[in-house]
Amino acid sequence: LRESSWQQWWRAIVLPLGAVAGALLAFRRLAGRGAADYEVKRSPLSRRLIVDTGRAGQKKHRILGLIEVDVTEARRRLHAHKEASGETVSFTAFVLACLGKVTERNKYFHARRDFWGRIILFDEVDCATMIEIEYEGQKFPLGHVIRGINRRSVRSIHEEIRAVQADPQRSPSLQRPEWMTTAFLVMPGFVRDLFYRFVVRSPRLAKEQVGTVQVSAVGMVGEGSGWGIGTGSPYTTSLLLGGIEKKPRLIDGQLVEREFLSVTVELDHDIIDGAPATRFVTRLKELLETGYGLDGLDGTAPADKAEGPIRSQL
Image 1 (tube, rainbow, N blue to C red):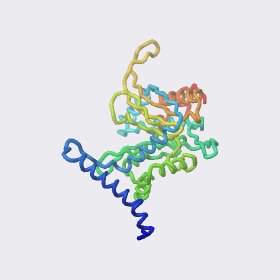
Image 2 (cartoon, one colour; image 1 turned 90 degrees about the vertical axis):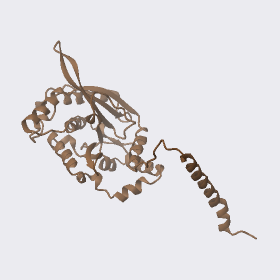
Image 3 (tube, rainbow, N blue to C red; image 1 turned 90 degrees about the horizontal axis):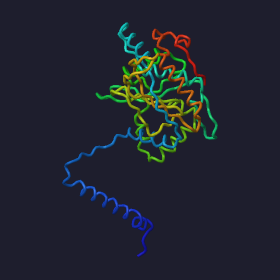
Image 4 (cartoon, rainbow, N blue to C red; image 1 turned 120 degrees about the vertical axis):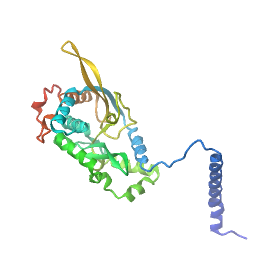
């Protein structure tokens, strides 16, 4: 008797796939039988975002710089403000204000390339950072984009960080429908990679969704100094803040104890060259070491002339 087309399809495709699936299931059961020295847990879907970001960042040609910044003066001012008012101002907010100011001087440090290879320069510096929040009874790092850090004071940035910590639902990251995020993460990896590639090559869309620069403060939850080396960042400029440690420094012929912050600077070499990168880092250090913006904690905008000499020019 002649087989129908569906019977041929069944024999050629479904039966072999069923046999393979059965063999894999049997192997899984045999492998787990009698083994009680380990525990199996499902990896949360949200981890796929971390994996995807690392994979996308590895495609960039990076410039890495490991620097130490003397933040003694900045921390002295922050401590004095806390003693006077009882308020603990976010150190990350201070770093963001400095980064926004120096990036504003050279827009290439938060530029993006589009599909045609053109470089898009933005006026507003939007910074993606991680804010630690309470979520379902546990500490959770929430990705949040703080807009226009080049035009805002330390006070303004600090208040936004504290507002998101108090009410995480204020962040657009938690305002997206959960089903939409889940549907995206269950897609195959190559499909998600195509989407990321489209976003990265669409500068205006990328700015709206993920900002233009990145700051991660891993050292704020630990003790001691040390630099972090990431797997790669999809941003043109990315800062990784390490720990703060007291070290001696020679000042006017005398050794004095100072506080040094470890900072990892990562730049996209496809857009940024070595000489501009050196000037960028030098100016960033000057702003951090002179406590830029901390005279404006009462809400007033910081003035350059009140923050000490700025020697480098971009």
